[in-house]
Image (cartoon, rainbow, N blue to C red):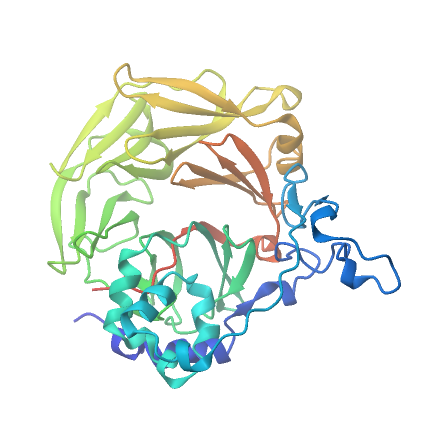
Length: 438
């Protein structure tokens, strides 16, 4: 029988209020030196009203000051020079008559992390997460934008912080609702986060929604042992699937298993052919799962719709030291890795797979100053993952995060104290209240 977490979707309202009271807060208060909201307290006051005794200048003649917000890349410059507008008097009797459907549509467009603050306005807003009309509007609006979820354990207590890329702010999410197992982060998709671990000697897989604090364990697999897992969410039919490939210790004789949330069971599929995997990292895009192989050289591709494995003879670039597969939008598949046998000649490069020619085409290189700052030693390890044509690099020893936008071709640092933990696990995360664990 499946174990359902102490909080269910029907009880997410009370849990959400508890988040607001007991620890769902911005981390910039505890990490002032590392994290600052855009236009934070470290900038110089350029407003004419803020200088007592100085000559007042017309807003139209105000000088535009360019500053560099803390927490962003040193080359990212934002302009602050908007004229100060007087406060508009809001008529209470008019705004109190706002139709409920219009109010729900407005609140559905508020960033999810701000909803917890707004719920203290009145009783009506306090129960907003239990309102099916609000959740309906929330499921139809565009995503808040990509976030980075960092998970680690401090004194055996699960800790979680989320960095909102649109808001440039860290938020702490209490993760004490999870069971006290020895588990690790698998990944995130569509607002859900997947973990796997051991409850004593039993291998278990767990899926949760960090915002609503709902969680549940999945049924046991047919061959229930530690496996390489990946989770994918289909928002159109409100379902998700978990794919289990080979055993983490290298046992290739296990059949591939796929969990379907609509059926609430695991199904057996083809055994992955005997190959020599060069990495346990997987990438999923366009209903296909990809793994790197050394023998035979290239990629192994699993078609989720057909349920079978196929080898792709895409040779890796020469002198590749370590490579990570990263899924982009639509059918784009990237390879990220270091090139060079000597530390002084090493560089980080990004390739894209040409599906028609089975070739890796170089598309970008990490600038040397970023490479030296991210990996000071040639032997240092790094992690790499991506979502929606965004690629994130994290260094195990430096505690730094570097973001690359494939479309804009822009590199930027991610500042904050949450990446400083040496045992932290990081993945992209899309915060959504309507993501269902069932």
